[in-house]
Length: 394
Image 1 (cartoon, helix red, strand yellow):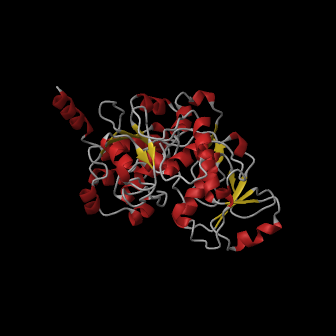
Image 2 (image 1 turned 90 degrees about the vertical axis):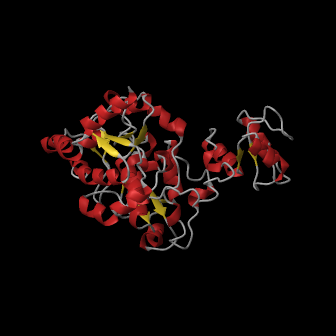
Image 3 (image 1 turned 90 degrees about the horizontal axis):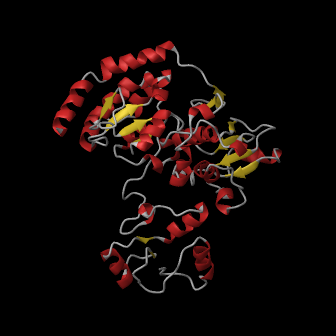
């Protein structure tokens, strides 16, 4: 049932029927959802009393755009998070954790984490694709201490009875499939540091790169060379990383082979000189984010939102990283295995020189030694804890 509709509403009803839905003029026993703008009136009150979902029209619009039925939660009254961006707290993005020095400057004090406890009663396991990454294993002992301050703990071995969160780099591994089978929360290393900095818990699906990335990029994006202008700080790193994750190549400057320029606004040298490169398509970050979320190269002309470029460079900065993952798209990786993939994998973006996809390398001995460092230093009490849990469940 739809309330507060414009007079010209036949197109809306037509789209609902096109996707297999039905419309009602009044409350009926088979009604599954009420769509309205204002949370008021007898229909609204009755639906709330009967626990029938009441959602904003944005839910319907996003369902049409994504060609699937989306979860109600973000749009659902009485407090739709898409409508009240600060209530509940939204998933913000922060600098990528490249080293201990950087983390030390951005992570909150232990005392703050002890008060907010974002990882209360959570048990975290780092997957093998994290533990064989030298850059991450150097950070893990440091970051695990913050996890403990936030109410959680880290374990060295996967135990489906104990582990609640699995941190992985890629979606394609036996550990990934096992975590799905065991209904664990799956997240990326970036989500871990983001959560510590936020000081509150947000689901990994809320931010595209808070969830492990595919090893292979989008086939249609492999010939894309993408440049970015008008974004700074964490937003810029997020977009640069996302470019690589889609399978495109990041270019720090406009060149003859550049295909797209992602613009945060209509000022800046790159934007001003873009007319010298007639082959370059001007889009905003929404195009890139939705290409990744839908896992396909989207026609930039299919939605006018993609080509909206404001004069003010700061106008779009706050909207970067707000696109969530889509469940049925992520489900495509449930049965994906490493053996089915070529030895060319995505490497996370760290600086202006990173090209994106590189030949897969075997883990170095130093990275493997870091596994024992984790066991000896970070989690010396794991065995005692597991014994305590087993005794508790007897």
